Amino acid sequence: MNTNYELFLCTTLLVLVFLPCYRADPDPLQDFCIADPKSGITVNGFACKAARAAQSSDFFSSALRKGGSTDNPNGSNATRMDVTVFPGLNTLGVSMNRVDFEEGGINPPHVHPRASEVGYVAEGILYVGILSTENKLYSKILKAGESFVMPRGLLHFQYNMGPGKATQFVSFDSQKPGIAFAPQTLFGSKPEIPTEILAKAFRVDADIIEYIKSKFQDDCSSGVEAA
Ligand code: GLV
Ligand code: MN
Image (cartoon, rainbow, N blue to C red; front, top):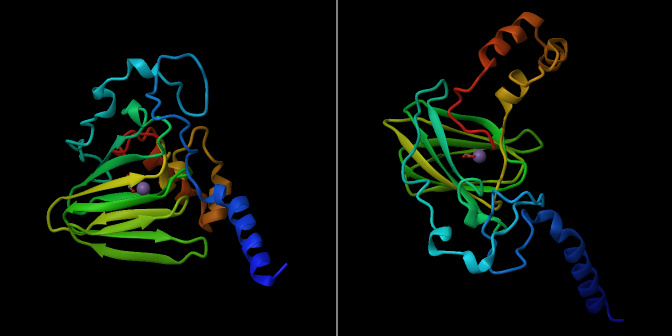
């Protein structure tokens, strides 16, 4: 066997073995599979309604036409358009959010366990950042018309520097990317993470942790719907 051929074989093998690790949702096995939320069948995703029953309206959503209220401690709101509000997305491996910000509003540091995200600024000026697993911050100030990508599983955030409001449209390579906000997850979980663990982890006294926890009790005001 000549060396080029061996190299080709090895590379192909490596790609075939490792490629699935870099994909988000699985590939569809039919043209479409409109989710049937009423089906009692439990599968990875949602069961399909009969293909012959599909209508044009199943491929349409106006979910992102308007943003929700930003009157909350974050000064932001994420309106979801994932498979739970747009059943036509089922099995297609895509979804979107619209994020509206008051001036000074933030989308707190969070991760999406099942998707990479690419965000396009429609209005305003956003400071956005991602953190690598080596604790390096990659950040940029984005103006309207500009985009930034958030690799799957990496912590990221957005901040509206102003002046004025800002709106960003983000898309995901998953029908349901999921979301975990670092502050709420750590300080507002139910049941709570024991204070002594957080005090040790954050290298501060327990009363500081109790104080922060008090800010996240019954926190339905983050302005971002649960995943
Ligand atoms: C923005 O980062 C979002 O996840 O909606
Ligand atoms: Mn995000």
